[in-house]
Length: 403
Image (cartoon, rainbow, N blue to C red; front, side):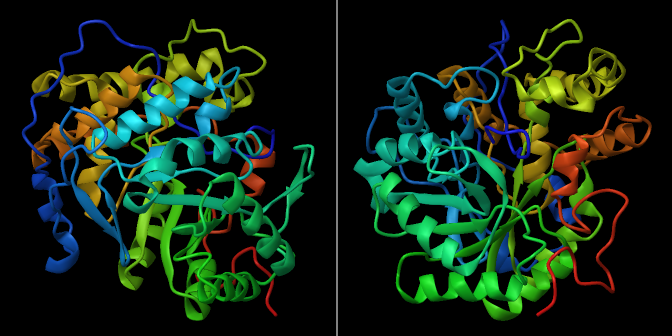
């Protein structure tokens, strides 16, 4: 995500004064009962206690298909730089390990973050506890050795080559979950799934995922190699997956991983209309983050604040709790850059939203017209048919060509 053609970022924003640390009461989301799922997939279990620090775990477990992960994951992309220079490497390593101490076992990164830097930081941070965590990374961008992004590519030979490179950067001999980052309009998805299947047989990859994919692509890939998880943008103010992708995931037993669960920081209430985004800040080029759009969209934050006031929780924590309440196989991956942001995210697991809270958020949102597209036009062009508003893959084949 360090290039003009890619985005799946998340941050909690700067520290907000006066935020109360919620007491550990566990995640109980009554609204989940409104969303029927099988009893087996609805179960969550407390995570084990900390093994590298003294602070106890405050998370639970969820299933992405057959893959068990913490109920809240961590996106590691922002450590490689997204809103400015990369995070100090030692500090990034410390925060990732602190998240593990809080119970996070699911860490998400990609070769394009940096490029390459995100995987290097994540590999260094998690090497001491490698056998106790789940690492997800992604292929799919055409990146030169110098780090220049030249578009997308998922040629089978390249998938195998860059997987070896990711393994070296991550300091591991297997990748738990390997996503295709963007659908390649020149390579049949069956060929992509077949290449990943070969890597799974070799033991280099354990699970296959898709990112920014619509229903038709998901179904085609799943027939060749079972898809464990789909990672698309989803949050209170970005509802595109509700068009067709969530229903497809539920039908096929696929987990769902929302990226940008905090709306690139906006849903935390810290991205104000007066904030000036520097040239290194990706949001400076997004229609939804113009000063006018940020001002017009503020009712979304106020809606979360009203619900949060009843729970003594920040709006970003309500946004994460809302996602966790949608389905028990949804696992958000906010991407903090500070210890405080990480702790605030983890405390969202302690928010117990009621059915009335969920209804208030959903009903309130229907009365708000969000201003500005979520991504720039070139970025949206890379999102698969059926994975973005105004499109549907029903009766079609998605962006991936047929064999």
